[in-house]
Image (cartoon, rainbow, N blue to C red; front, side, top):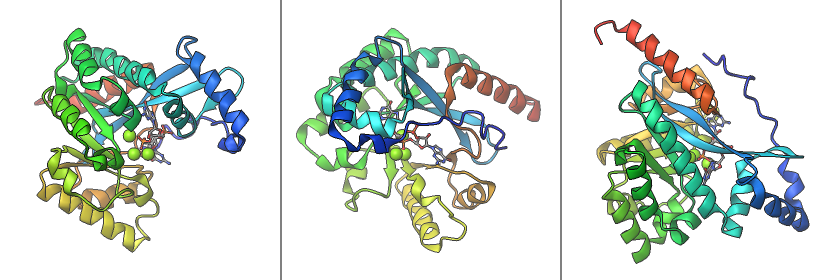
Length: 287
Ligand code: C2E
Ligand code: MG
Ligand code: MG
Ligand code: MG
């Protein structure tokens, strides 16, 4: 466990650079070429079953290899892509990449799914449900092989447009997850209104969980609430065995974090699930 540490330690370009407006404009201009110049890559981070560490799903996480700056963090370039509107095109590209990998990886594990982050801008400006429908058809994938991670702010908007677009997406059987749960709003009525499947507890709550009684109380309460509303919980940002143990004690089924695996390129991910599948078969020869 934790053996991946260090290996994929990307040295991200320092966001302090972004303080200047001209620099952020320059980076936005560079980003326009990123897709056509093959500088974007989707990494995949395993989501594991807490009981046995078996990989059940992945989150698709975008990476930008800038020609002179090296790796630029998505925390830096996603907001730029949102401001310029480019997130619509980039977001579609990520979904297409994920679907292509799903066709391969579901041959190894038939119930495998990939979660894709969807920006509010992409959701509001794009034809997301249409695109999803078309792409799922193209790759002959069932809707439940994809999960969409939204932020609370999108669902809080609670406009007619958001509601009807979500309705269309739900008809595709695609699951909806709330990302970074717990950091946004306290009005939880949208959880019921939109039939959310999954809550992803924000990783800030996992930090020093063992020593932090308040965070323990929050995480526990989120897990309880999710269970009584029949939602799945994913605890993200788990970095050590103690945290994994605590979370397991709250009946949380799925974890994601550096303790198990960091995000890795598609090829590395393929070997991870290949190995994982063989290992879990020999653990349970009856399967
Ligand atoms: P997120 O969706 O909350 O993704 C989880 C982030 O937590 C990822 O950061 C992941 O690398 C990191 N993480 C996972 N486990 C651990 C851990 O144990 N410890 C720590 N310290 N970090 C962990 P990443 O890849 O830098 O992405 C940052 C954010 O950028 C994402 O947060 C998401 O909001 C956004 N993003 C990434 N890819 C996309 C994309 O394709 N589309 C959109 N719209 N947003 C994206
Ligand atoms: Mg996410
Ligand atoms: Mg998150
Ligand atoms: Mg986040």
